[in-house]
Every structure is written in C-alpha cells, then in structure tokens.
Length: 271
Image (cartoon, rainbow, N blue to C red; front, side, top):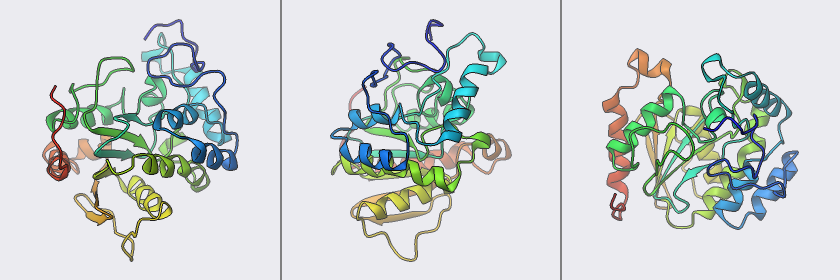
C-alpha cells in the first residue's frame, strides 16, 4: 500500500474499497449507531457509516494508537486505523462472522481477516471451497474477490487484548442487525468463527425477528441450528492458539465450508 496515506487513513483519500467521504455521518455514541444503522438504505451506505464510527472511546484510542505506533515489521506501511466494515458480496449466500479485527491485521490493511495468520487460514479455506478467487488476501485492492460470500466482524474495531467489553459489543450490534436485514432473501448460511461470533449471530437473528430456538443453541465446532431457512454453523476460530495446538485442523475447517457450499442452492459464479 502506498506510504502517502496517513495513519489512520482519512476518509475519501483514495484507499481501495473505502466508501466513506469527509461528509459521511459519524456515529459518536450508541444512539448514533442505532440511528445511522437503521437509516442505511444499502450495504454500501452501511459500510461507509461503519468505517467512520467513533462510538466507543476506548476502541477509538486503541486502534488509532496502534496505527500511529505500528509494529516494527510494518513501520513503513500506512495503517487503516478505522473500524472495519464487512467485505465481499453485498447479497451473499454465505456470511462468515468473526470476533473483531486484529490490531496489525485488519486494523492495518483495512480489510477484515486480511494481514494476519487467522486470515491466512480463512482465505485458503474459502478458496479451496470455491468461495474466494485467490488463496491469500494481503491488502485492500489486491484483486481478491469473494464469491457469493461476505465476511464481517461482530465488533468492528480492533480491541485491546482482542477482548471487547460487553458495552462495546452491544454498542456495535446494530451494524450487524442492519446488515442482516439488508441481505434480504439471499443469505442461506452463516458460519460463526468462535463462541463470541456465535453469540453475536444468535443475538442479531433474535433482534431482527427470527424465531431462534430456545434454549439458545450452544456453540461448538460443527454445531448447527436452522432458523427461517437459514443454516448457522459454528467453527472454532482459526486463531494461532487453535491452529498451532491442533484444536482446529485444515480438514476440520474445510468440512465446515464444504457443509456451507452444500447448503447453497444456487451455482457460484464462474471464475
């Protein structure tokens, strides 16, 4: 990525896939998030609003401090340093939900799951399943495309210690609620990466009026439940802790996405 961008990146400065401009309304508290999410008439409009959100002071400070200080290995690169909107197909059949962006991954590259080891596993698996055009994702504008698939984080800003607070989780939730509503009838499968994402998906589906089973479905690798024709599948998160210890193997991960593809009832685009 060219070094002339500021860290954090200024909206409207030409960063690939940046849909915001200096005129994009900024959410500065929880009420603003609810209002702006509810007012978004398209996925693109929602993504623009997400990418300039400043509703959680702790997360704003952390993501921007990281963007300015940088990791030594990325010292010559600009850091996005803003919330990470969803990325991929705007009318997806498959939605992949994670916890939050990595401080030196998505917070640096501006694309969810891009630039860290978890993303390396995820994009490779999506490519093997026929849901991504390339096996790697290095930075925004690298030519990668998702096929009938979209990915999003439950919390849109990189949090300290990868641990959002309950208040931050709840403040961010309307973005996911509105995203689900905007997909209409295209969405057929949600893959939740980890227990935090699973709970976020269950909560969002409940809030948008889906009859989620009770008691609430419990998370586990390969766990499934169906609601309103939508299949939700749980997977262990492809964190280094899980992949290095063998708790999550490539074959286990591939099985989850094979199940998702099996469920999709329309053909994927030709590469």
